Image (cartoon, rainbow, N blue to C red):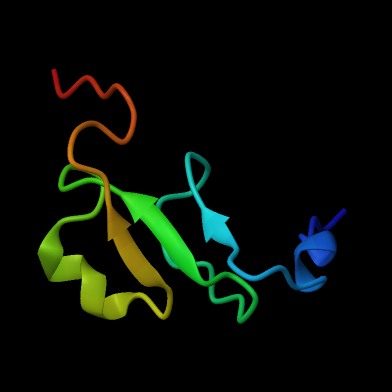
Length: 65
C-alpha cells in the first residue's frame, strides 16, 4: 500500500516539513524544511527544492555514539 500525503496538496500559505524525514520531499506543495546543522549540513542544502529553514539549536535529540 503506497502512502501519499494527498491532503497536503490542498495548499496553505506555507507548508513545512519537520521531524519526519529530514530530506528533500520532491513534492511541489512542500515549501520549506526545518532542520539544524546536524541533520542537514550546509553542503546538502543545494540538493533541496524546498527552502531550508535553520533552527538555531537542536532539530531533534540525536545520539552520535
